[in-house]
Image (cartoon, rainbow, N blue to C red; front, side):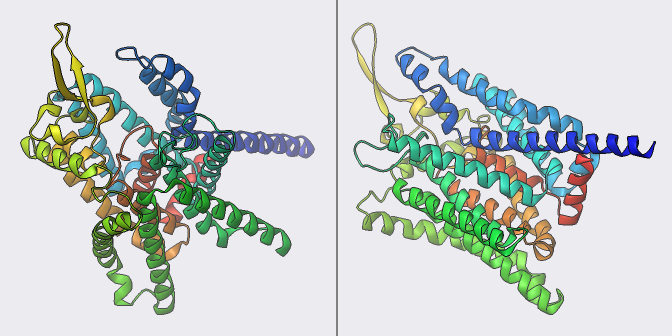
Length: 460
């Protein structure tokens, strides 16, 4: 009888191991797909064939593919989610933010755009919650690292095989399998950041195996750095610098806390120091980026972003309280007729049937180039206040977790990488891996022990 029970238990353990391994493989594919490059490459030929068709269906194909990849995560979330997973202050603020952006469909100036974008935002945020519920921080770190290496290796292969638009024809920088260099660069930067965080945690049965593992991770991080350099993207370099400084700050806090038993004033007020330092750091990076661009022989208007930012700010002032609906403003032709539209890039000529010619901003090639303006334009002051409260809550809540756990530093590093990168690109958006990473950190419980216990309970 005991022998039969033991065999049954062994089979159950083997089945659980296979299922759990399959889940981890799925998450790696999920994160890789949400870097967007693989999905766009799958549909690239079809998209090129419909380029001259009004309202081409390829955009819906992209959305459908992203949704299909995330549906298993939503199903698994429904299986493992418990009430205690959404009882923290961070979770409530996330729910408020997602609900407000979803409700913005009701007053959106372009509801058909807002409803799709709001669904994407909520779907990706729910997949992030699944990762928090199901896996520990270290496991998520490994899966993110492996997904980033997949994107980098595929991009190197694309460049080596001279795939279409894998390299800029005019300037020679690398694009790989991605839409542009600012889509490739975050993949390499997050890969470097994850690799650096994993180096001290690599384990092996022998010292030799541990050294080999560290050598492999360090080598891939070096490869990531090379691809980042070839992309010539200053946005991700600046964001990586800020995230690295942030991670170093919290590691110093850990050391000081361990030596002073947590009683040092620097530890008690570390969250205030960190918030002020990050704010000053973003301001400093933005102030010197113009000089860096000048030294590199590039334009000092942030590649035309200044015109987009001014136009977005004027649009926000015109409707400051509730905004225009999530992701509706820059797709709404009426919004693009606001004051100063003629200074925007991507102004196209429109030839009417009568032969008359007029000018208008192309909504398919224009966007705010800022996650912050996306939030303000999409949900107004209310959305901006909730987002600021959410970021502050994460810093305050994670202060104790970072002191107790080395892996929790990853949450803080990725939050501020996205915060910095979103100042110049629209990264706070559904179906994007940076929003997945940010939402994962925002959902994370305030205590690492509490989180790991929840994840273990879910696996059991």
